[in-house]
Image (cartoon, rainbow, N blue to C red):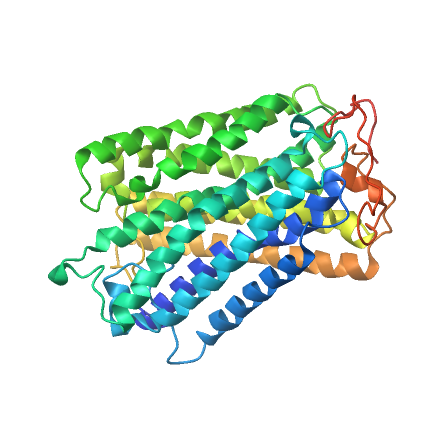
Length: 485
């Protein structure tokens, strides 16, 4: 309902900043790279551990320190209200809060990301099992390595942007002060050079989850495996040539608008290949609708909707009209909110037996999926509708326009349904850990190497004697006649 009824304007800006930073860097990156990446990479390639365990520990402690600093912003007087982007000139204003905390958090997260990226790349290059070649590599591993290549190239750009922000606010430099020869657009260019590719850091490993789950429960080889590999690396390369589309309304020259409009539409080609191949993997398969399969298919659907609504945003004429509206928020959350979240939750269920030796409760998995899926579509689709009706984004309040009010009330109901689904999923994890059914070895009958170490996975993975990969082995070779229980 219109009117500031729960929090004031400053608290709203603080909560919005915390939501953006927390969900992007703590959930959408840390969950599948720091969590699943560390767990699955050595197991999938037939290794004992990552190449540099101590560097891995250092990366975790840097991430932990960033958590501590982030929690310090909860203390009154330490609130950060810069939004997750930290745009100047507002972030240089005292009303923006303690910008230094934002800068230090970004530096610690960046250091953690670079350490992890180096570790994972060296692990993949030097520790693969004999016969585990580039074109026999799991798609999750391809996407994980590609995401970390982006981190290696892009994180220094983010570090430079926030460092200049710190110098401007606290040491009197004028990188972004137009009155002294600076330009706020410098920050936007440097920031988005990393922060658009980071979208693919977040979504590529989730594409890997879809590629691991869908063939298992379709009992079919992954369709077009080679094209999927090339698509992953094409997305990685093209991701660095898209950042200006975040600045179409910022006064950039028309030639850059035209060029980056083309590159924005170009990336739809490799992503479209992936969706096409996932669907053809299902064709004539013996499909088992286990809860993780529902999460994977639901995630593909959410990404498809997010992608289709993102194409108009790559067209300058349309983007100029909706760029600062809730349409962008709805589109963004279809892609980075729910496509990623559904993929991660499906991965939790899929590899739950490998991590714990127990099954995730199937009934709770399906119930939570349908609640999350329904709630998210109500919430985010109606956000896009509100945006098309002119409702701006990042505003803590809005005028009492009946159409907007109705849409926001229904969105709130959708958000509550989504929240109930998340609570049920979390309860399922606790119940599975406490009283879950004991899992058998390789419960999903997958040929992938991570299931060769027993259930639960033993310490040090494959040990000092990695498995030898036979010439006819492939991680996606399934027999559809083999029916899963």
